[in-house]
Amino acid sequence: MYDPKSLKAEEFISHEEILETLDYAKKNKDNVELIDQIIAKARLAKGLTHREASVLLACDIPEKIQEIYDLAEQIKKDFYGSRIVMFAPLYLSNYCVNGCTYCPYHLKNKHIARKKLSLEEVEKEVIALQDMGHKRLAIEAGEDPVNNPIEYILDCVKTIYSIKHKNGAIRRVNINIAATTVENYRKLKEAEIGTYILFQETYHKESYEKLHPTGPKHDYSYHTEAMDRAMEGGIDDVGLGVLFGLELYQYEFAGLLMHAEHLEAVHGVGPHTISVPRIKKADDIDPDAFDNGIDDEIFAKLCALIRISVPYTGMIVSTRESQKVREQVIRLGVSQISGGSRTSVGGYQEDIRPTDTEQFDVSDQRSLDEVVHWLMDMGYIPSFCTACYREGRTGDRFMSLCKSGQIQNCCQPNALMTLKEYLMDYASEDTRKVGEALIAAELNHIPKEKVRLICEDHLQKIENGIRD
Ligand code: SAM
Image 1 (cartoon, helix red, strand yellow):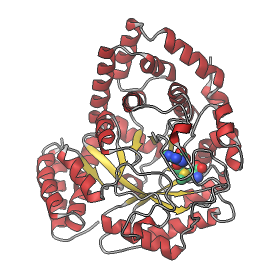
Image 2 (cartoon, helix red, strand yellow; image 1 turned 90 degrees about the vertical axis):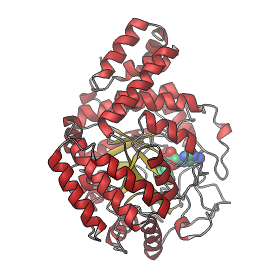
Image 3 (cartoon, protein in one colour; image 1 turned 90 degrees about the horizontal axis):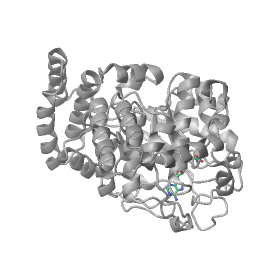
Image 4 (cartoon, helix red, strand yellow; image 1 turned 135 degrees about the horizontal axis):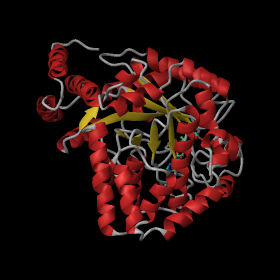
């Protein structure tokens, strides 16, 4: 039918195939025999096709949904253990030439203060983030070739990596900037960025063009093929996402999985991460103006289904979601969350959360320390680990580690050691107590004795003041 290898992303993620998929899913939503077969296939943890996963999304039989949730939880445990990777967004500039109708950065919005960080301000922001304990950032910027050219982004990345402050350095900078050229992706790769993240916003071309009426982002093909150009430029960790609320979620879900299938078929490696943002209230933006909003129940189902459809892909949830929702989706498959986030340009240097340049309302407004404490209370290990990237384990090399099951012997100790560093250097007394008890208990879950002993030795060294 469709040969992902020979088609461009836009051709592969075709409107016709998505409509046929939705039709197939609707017709089979009560076909228990087929649903059982698909769930049985998902149990093998090798993933599902967009058609199979769409049938499960359409199914509303309570017992089957429960089976899907249980399986998502199991796959999450098997592949990610109890680790949750922590990061924070860093907004560099809200200058933007696009006309995205859902984003407060849109060019015509005259009542938002426009701001771009100087390199000195980047340094101050990064020091504030390091003082919280962050090691991993996702940088964000509007699209503006004059104010935010690629050279500016590269200078910011270089500055961020160069700041050594107290015990910390930022070890991984992920980038969420507009679609660009192969040449620019190559430059980003040379600057040693982590994941290149770009949300598709919507896979529905007609809606996409309406939602992006003006500016370079209007070009659906250029946007949809960005990940192929990124991979051509040498970036092998790419992060997909759609902005839920813009279009029908069933449509977006099929499109998202087809995009993952396309990357796997053409480049031999699927997306490193999938983000699941939902549209939020923001300056000049009323989310109710978009009539495809999804409730928390559907949101949880989508997260569970992404987990079982692409078991090796990390899943990210931001502070757009509340504590309650985050709690549910972390259980069902989310592996990375942000904490202590500010979505305003320059927001981390302010004592009080600024709102004048904020990109969207933050639902989870807790500090990083509170988020870390909360995760540990639920038995999770907040991880500040970036070892894979420093060892060059990206793209297919990361995926093979994940598929080999060795992640427990590798990531678990690393997570514990980075948590120990966090507890010693940044945590409140109460959080430290909870964390020390968690580390002691979790050491026993490292399968190989030799690895456990090495880990114990490193933990002692961290206790004695030695830092990585
Ligand atoms: N400018 C870059 C681009 O065009 O891809 C990316 C940076 S933008 C700061 C990051 C993402 O924020 C967008 O891709 C969009 O999905 C999301 N976003 C925009 N407006 C939003 C809103 N009102 N609520 C929630 N998320 C929003």
